[in-house]
Image 1 (cartoon, rainbow, N blue to C red):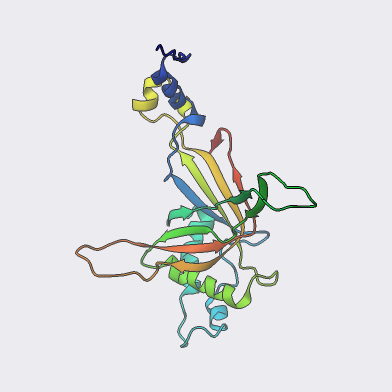
Image 2: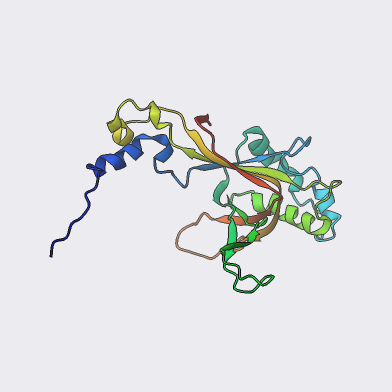
Length: 248
């Protein structure tokens, strides 16, 4: 018995895969090269809500004592890194939005007809699955800014007269635009010859923190450890944008 196998038209598979490495669009992306930017929504000047102050926080009745909580001083420390330098370099991790659509076959009679399918059943739009992790520093951004922000949101909610929102943009970047390399060998082995470029970015509108994760996990160890704190954010809408030749 003879077996006849079809031939593959593509002769050189290795060169075909290397062609992907020569094109910026199909070059493997770095998953951990990202920057997070906080922006002031609307006409507000600061990305951190103006209502977030020691005085307004004490008025909630959550805290005790008469000493300042340190919110005002912390805002003066961190606003220059958020609004002045544009990017929040204390961000060490992000977990972005998911999409889920349910599709199924329905096996019941509708008006005497048996539908076949598949049919779209539902689309889940989770508006609370944005997670951002911040590095823990000597003046804790999570404890002095995010924590009272969450507490204020739990009391006031989110209305026009009390603006607790901010805009968050997550930029994913490539090390450089590969077309700046002169030869194919320099793509894999050459020195860097171009500036970083944005390969995609997520824009989240009306963001408010509502949950703090793993903020109080601490234990003695042989060496000093540097940790972080995760936070969850609610938002209203989001966009995923892929620029072409977008300079960072």
